[in-house]
Image 1 (cartoon, rainbow, N blue to C red):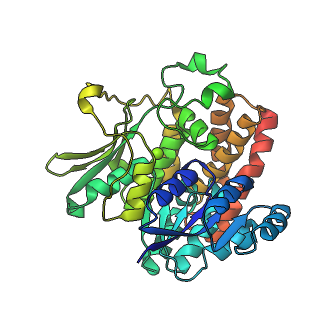
Image 2 (spheres, rainbow, N blue to C red; image 1 turned 30 degrees about the vertical axis):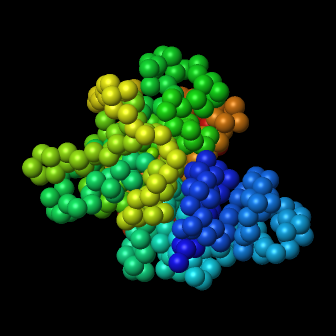
Image 3 (cartoon, rainbow, N blue to C red; image 1 turned 60 degrees about the vertical axis):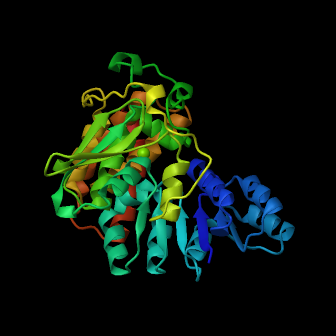
Length: 385
Ligand code: MG
């Protein structure tokens, strides 16, 4: 029996690589539905080659056009369309490759429909971690991480007894500006920030990598996914991005997961877990590499990593506030409206203001309100910068 798969955010970086993996292994998987945003041509390219039961686009005009062009496929549109796709029966896995807070409601809806999720939408875990995980537990749904670091942790935890775990060690490449000092960072451009030295990714996460906000979010994501205190999560710099993360045990044994920097590997593992299957990725040659290097992160150089820990310790609605502020700040940077270092300033200031509306155990509505509050607050903060 083929696994029936829905892919949300299919035209994005992780999404399109997920579709790649699924096409490579058509003997194992059946793509039931693809959801895209504005890149409707991605969906059309797919439909010109393969059948699809369901499709979803962001805008109504695109929906009207595509539904007439491909009458054999049933189409949806907008946020409701994502809910329709995650409500389908007889689906084995939803791949949530959406970018940003918009991924939260589809994640929760898929859980309510008892569908396992390959999760690469980290914002939903950052903003609403305990709500998502509590619901997954309640509905006995598996969330399998796609983020390379969390996939590595997930893999190295296997075969060990959980109470023997001492800490998680998350590796960080350092992003596009890892060799620049604070002074250099004042004048970096969007184009420079979008050049990640190791991974090929979407624009938002590439900027988040350059600010190290991404690594900070990954710390929160690890706390959420693996239910481990922040004191037991360490970040170390590893520019080669070959060791994708590690787990350390009470006997001081450290288990690492290694591989070439190819997102299709953690994507594939989430799809085939617990099995491993052949693929056409490159083989890792440690002798060609010769050396792997590691060092401690400089929290003064990367203050957003520090902020993420602080926000993680505060918990409640604070991660949602940081997420909202950061999403909006990155958007403004990508629109050339603010400088690179303004992203940091905005995040720190919105979090500082956010403490006044702190909620220890927020409901889903309060999480959404907090995220929206932060998005709006960015404009106000910006006018004072
Ligand atoms: Mg990652």
